[in-house]
Length: 355
Image (cartoon, rainbow, N blue to C red):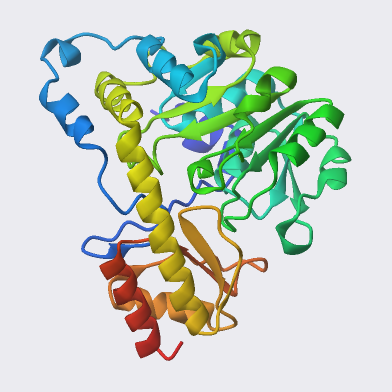
């Protein structure tokens, strides 16, 4: 008897079959990871105390679907109403919710390019058009081109990834005023930027702007997956309809509360990272490499035509950095700030390779 069951190709939507999935940074056991912009130091001791105090019912029962205590803690930290905050399974989850809430097939979303590659992946999943607008000279904001893109949503990572370059909040607010759509400012690395760089204080005056924040970087909770979207309460209430029922698990809510509550330790993490970043930049400049001025916990180094060779040589020596074989980034290496001993190992390996 002939089977009438459909093939997988017949079941999966054509636009999903044709898309490329997101490519995360390599995960290679026993390697020094300087390729995924994780914090080089462990999270607050309060996080581990919170885990130790976690009770059995915390896993037996569903977590708070609204993450109310987390949102209240985030609101106190950033001086923002809790009703205007959505908690997510990382800021990537908040991005997914924004795409699902605001965009439908045929819409456009635009980004300055190059930037975080997940923006493209989410556009492909939602079957919307992605418009890449090249950054201006010295990674300046291509505001006019973004406004002319016909996009319903603009996404700007600030500081940008992979360049670690920074756009002033005043310039982003000016863009929001002229844009007939939603401006999403992704502030994953903002804690490493100069004080006053965040757009959060400007949100009340700009109803068509939201800010994304994450605990993956400066709070050293990449493995816990916790992020936030801040914006008008009316938009957040719509996003609440779209999120998964229990999108932030109980363990993450517990460690997130502990991390957000230990401000002194967080300040120390940031200070240690900035000091290590300065040392890394100095070492790379001694190799003759030009650097994009960094406002993140990583640097983008102009390594030249042999960048791919340096990347491969470092990997052979158990050190991972990020390299993209693309026209815009082929001669660059993105290197995460590590602890002092990690950076000494990296620089020694580069000298050994002849960099």
